[in-house]
Image 1 (tube, rainbow, N blue to C red):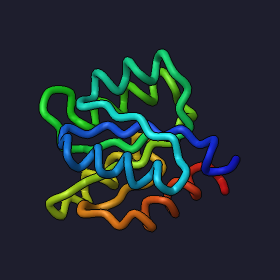
Image 2 (image 1 turned 180 degrees about the vertical axis):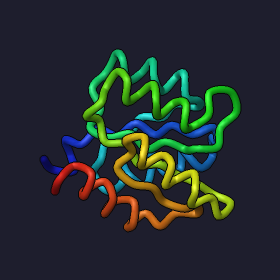
Image 3 (image 1 turned 90 degrees about the horizontal axis):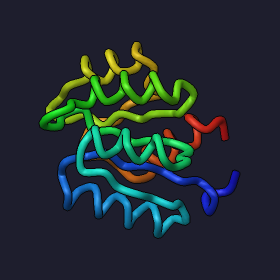
Image 4 (image 1 turned 30 degrees about the vertical axis):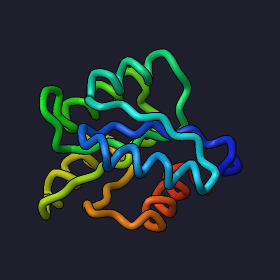
Length: 123
C-alpha cells in the first residue's frame, strides 16, 4: 500500500492543530480527513473506509478512551494511534490495552507519526 492510497482519519478538537496535521500528511502523499470530536469521527468511520485513525485522548464530550472503545467495537481491526499531551503516558498505555496500535505525545514530530502509521499498517 503506497502513501497515495492510505486514507487517515484525524480526530481532535484542536482545529488549528488537526488542520495543520492534515495538510502535512497530505503534503507527504496521504489522504487525510478530519473530525472535530469523537462522535463525528465514529460517524465518519461507520460510513467511509479509512486505513488508520489518529485519535486525541483529551477531548470534551466523548473523550478519546470512550471514542476508542466505540471504534474498536465497530471496527476491531482498524489501527488507531493515540495522541496524548500533558505528559499523560498512562492514558496512552491504557489506550493500548484497549486496542490502540500505539500512541504519541504532543507536540508530535511528523516523522515519528509517519513511522507509527507505517508500523500500524504492517509496512
